[in-house]
Image 1 (spheres, rainbow over the protein chains, first blue to last red):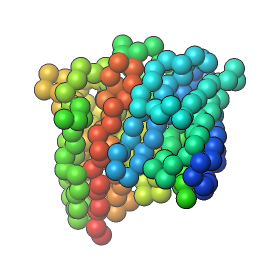
Image 2 (tube, each protein chain N blue to C red):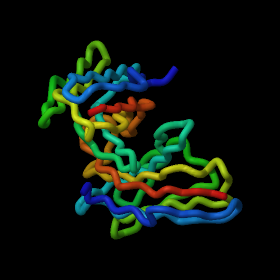
Image 3 (tube, chains in turn green, brown):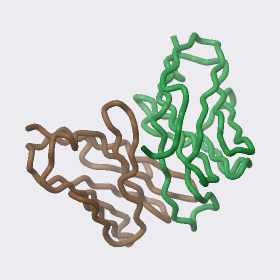
Image 4 (spheres, each protein chain N blue to C red):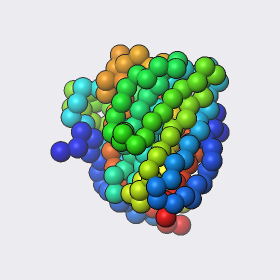
Length: 117
Length: 107
């Protein structure tokens, strides 16, 4: 058990809908990262939050947004869903988030499998 | 060109064999991770290393910073080692992933 909790584990929804994925980081970890894993793309970094503030942005669509709350849990909001958004969405947490000079391990949640029909 | 290349893409081995998975990268990194993704989808972090070598049980990870190359070795492989092994490099605070190596160990 990594200590990172993601809910829900599975989600099936229709095109055009909006969903929210939730992540609780390991106790004490300030950084939360969101990743998307689709069949054809592999794992892709979406966005990182550190202590409530957006720290880095990757290949995140404008239809997607995220936030990190004062209790450090994070939510990834996906709207106007398309079939191509079907993927595994992973959250990871780490203690630090201050950039390339910090060498901290990331712990992954079990992922949320989103199916858009 | 991907910043992180893994080889082989697929690997089938017999139980007991020694296995090597390779990872090459093209950017300056602060750390490299080896991850294991189980058939059910869950991801486990195996190693994080920035120099030298680390060992955990039957798993050994090495990195050569000058050559921008890392290897993951599995000794005395077992069917329960069957999984996708993913190399990821930490670059400017983010993780960049390789496409993974799918390992299947036959009894």
